[in-house]
Image (cartoon, rainbow, N blue to C red):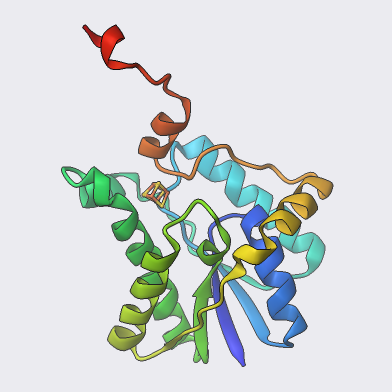
Length: 183
Ligand code: SF4
């Protein structure tokens, strides 16, 4: 099977890559993440993947587009629902490349993360399968969570501390202010 895997970042790619490779799939990676902000963070994650995949000799397609304004326009006033838009944007682009490149199926490393909305990703993937006519390959990669972390640390990969968008950066770093302190 010729499979295209959307890659959110190198550390999240390690485990899914290993299990899919063991199945002998003809595997190509696809990097498209306009949700990663600010620009220096985007470049850091991109370079980490480029260096690691070069070392491992992995084929990757890069859609290197820093679409900050487009992303923000898509989520503004519905920030609480932003992850659904974010998943859709990236998975749709993956399906379109899969279609163009005559892949049998597409999938995503987002299915590896314990911090993502796993069921929503599976649902959106299935919807895009119907829209685009290319199979969404579902696998719960979360069982390799610890192993992936261990291996990424061992390889000395840059491991980001927040999901990607500026909202997630705020949630990660801004001190929580309780109600008493607010008044
Ligand atoms: S928190 Fe993560 S998945 Fe959700 S919108 Fe931000 S970057 Fe995308």
